Amino acid sequence: MFDLIGGLPVHPLVVHAVVVLLPLAVLGTVAVAARPAWRARYGGINALVAVVGTALCPVATSSGESLEHRVGDPGRHAELGDQLVWFALPLAVLAVVLWWLQRRRRDEAGRPPAAVTVVAALSVVAALATAMQVYRVGDSGAQAVWKDQVNAAPQKSGS
Image 1 (tube, one colour):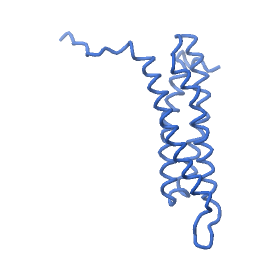
Image 2 (cartoon, one colour):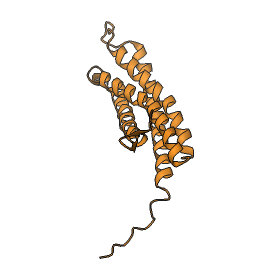
Image 3 (tube, one colour):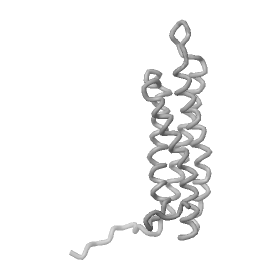
Image 4 (tube, one colour):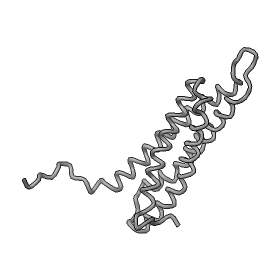
């Protein structure tokens, strides 16, 4: 199912969506956690980006397994890629909860519910963990694909 589109492997196509959306969600989550004024304006779109990025993780791993059958074992990359959803899922859930909580009523002093502070702190931790895992997966994938392909010194041109 997640093998080829127009003769091209689905995996690199989906992976590029994941490596754009999850880092955007990481940055957005840290921003809305740190700046309460941004939560109402950007919290919903940030939550949507986090959810879509997370939803694409299983598509990326499934398409990666299909690609593995065609080109061989990518080594550690497959293991790290399988773990990514478990980092992205808490980020997505916390981004949604943070957005939802900011929509609740404030107390008499105009403060949001105390739970917002706790969720904001947890969301920053989840964002940082997700960022590190996205980096690890991407680096291992680049190593698997390009390590033996790229020369240490550039080729000299014939002219």
